[in-house]
Image (cartoon, rainbow over all chains, first blue to last red; front, side):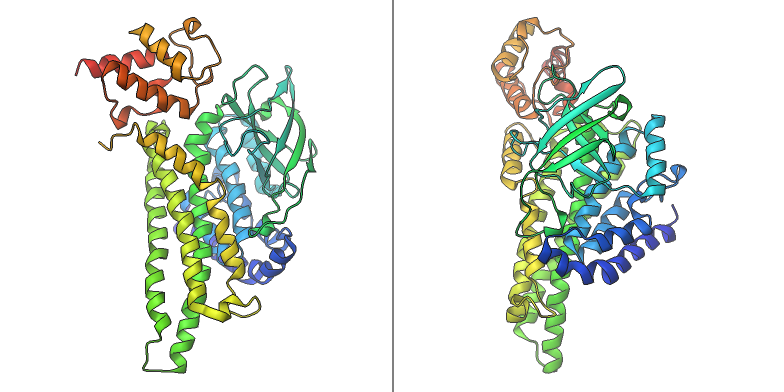
Length: 389
Length: 79
């Protein structure tokens, strides 16, 4: 794709962020409602098929483009950005692992035309936050399958058109012998099993749902989920989430910067004390951006070799991605806190142009999806055997 | 050597299959070995065989089966 074409995707995202997602963001947050206005605009501009290759009718955007689109949306509405990001992770799983099959090539061509929103059902009651373990299993005969799953959190589960669901390959499979299954609109019900009233990311509507689904066995991706997870789902998640985090962080820092500029204009010739605090927080945003960017470049190199580099299934690579998650999720809370400190009472009020409440609350979600302690524990285990050689 | 590997898999692999019955090329992950368990297996292998797996060998394929592990250990022991 030409540079000008993808930069226009980012400009489109910027415009949607500024003109549609942003103005609705407070209402989305207050009501914990789905950001329908922004998602409609995203669909109208065919952004949901951004990652679909051009030969299938998509924009053929890069992962970096997806991360930047997530950022542009995240500057104005964390929930919108996260919904976009979660959908793109599902698309990436299909693009990277299923396009050798006509069924999925047709599916993605369809997605370009209809802009279906794909949800993710990886979590499950009874497995804790462990994505690489399932209790539920696919039940199938020669042609069809059924799958029932009790999820603890399904991102925008009630608003998704289609879903990608993890499950044990069969009832005789072990918990980590999983497959990823595409479940289509009309073939499933999602019965909401609890309330959705979180501190932040309120528009993502990620309540617990019980999924009852069926479909054709063609809809089961053939590549084992262990491979899809380490090659695509985990890395792509980190990069698009990092995009949303950078967007959230920018939103906080932009307000802090505007506040400081306002103080300076009121007293030309002085450097307000808040400017020093601003100088302290700006490097944190740069750190977040550059660490994500460096890993993203490395990932693009590893995934583009044919076959994809074995390094993608290495402990050292998993450690790096986990590190990004830990650092990034901690940095954005730090950044949002400092921005609040700079903006003071104006930031603390919910009805001022410097309000930082929603951004701060949204920032806290990052450390919880997946819980950082779980990730630190995994890293600790890996550090028992990694040599740093 | 194979017997020691099977014992380590029995003690640390958390497999759902009897380790004495595993074929040398059976997929250990499909037999139930999680990534967490695989780290414990790696540690035990290092301890028992007095070797160190360099980082480049700490990847999924190296610990995929008994025969893959045997190959890895042999490679390290000859160097």
